Amino acid sequence: MAGQSKRELKRQHIVASAQAVAAREGSGAATLRAIAAEAGMAPNAVLYYFGSLADIAAAAVQSSSDRLLQQLNEAVASHSTPTAKLAAAIRSGTMAGLNDDISRILYEYWPDALRDDEMRRIQAELTREQQSIYQDIIAMGVASGDFRAAMEPADIARILVAQEDGLVMDVLAGVASSRYVLELNARLAAVLLDADPAQLV
Image: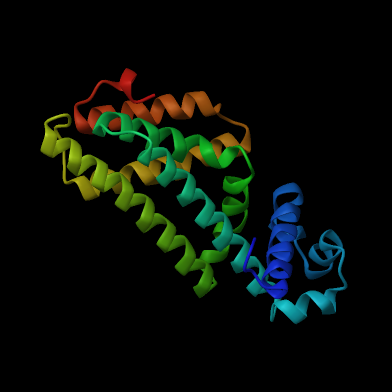
């Protein structure tokens, strides 16, 4: 935290408080009063650092999105072959956000993208970045001969991200296990890329 101003540290504390309330009680419960109480501050003091509750919510979602992408990039970068990178991306995309409430926070606020331009921008950027990571891995695998793509790499990447989005929601809702979702995503990728699903789990 060296070099960060006291104001920035306070903003981060408020964002973390908003994330904690949303993860524990739902985004609807993450009111200004609830966030301020979680942060140990008065509501008007919170508004000194953020102009509105909507600004706090957007910052909470942006922070969660950034963290999810960081985990995904780190997971992929730790491997060298296209198959190992793809397996890491599938594992991270399916399970990483479940470990520290990142996915829960993103899903809590996801419907806001239907009405709020900033939330829509954050969600769209997250999707583009996830898709880009998958697309680069797939293109690398096609070039090396590890994969034989059933369609354009960009389309496969988009399908895999959409599959993750839908199935991780099932995990959060308690209607599917993370292991089942991981294996299902691996099987889908294997079919689309003519790969061995056992190597993608």
